[in-house]
Amino acid sequence: MKKSQDKKVQGLINDIEMYDSDKYQLLMNLRDLAFHHHPKTQERVMYGGIMFSLVNDYGGIFVRKNHISFEFTSGNEFQDPEKLLEGKGKFRRHLKLRSLEDIENKKVSYYIQQIQ
Image 1 (tube, rainbow, N blue to C red):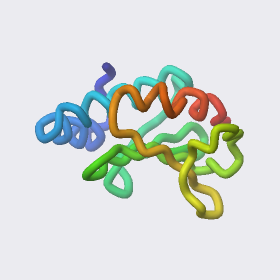
Image 2: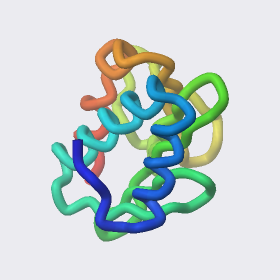
Image 3: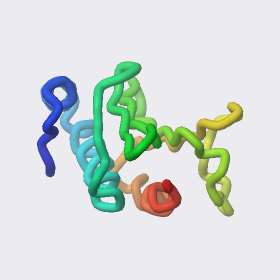
C-alpha cells in the first residue's frame, strides 16, 4: 500500500488508520486502484477527503461515518449498465462502499477505467 507524497494526504491517512482500521483498509485499497489504473494520478486533501487529478480533478475518496464514498467528478458520463452509481446532481456520481467486498461488488475498477 502506497504512502502519499503529499504530507496532508498522508496525515489524513494516518488519522483514519488510528481511529478505524476497517475504513483504513478500504481507503488504501481504493487508492491503490486509482493509482493502478492511472499511475500519473496526483492527490491532495480537499473537502475533507482525498481528491484525485490527472490534468483535471477526476474524483475523490471521502470517509463518512458509515461508509466510504468514491466520488467521480464526471460520473454522469459513465456507462452504468447495472445502475450502481448514486447521485442525481448535474455531473458528480458516487459509490458508497462499506466493506472490502464492495470494491468488487460495486465494480469500482470498471468506473475508474472510464476516467479519461
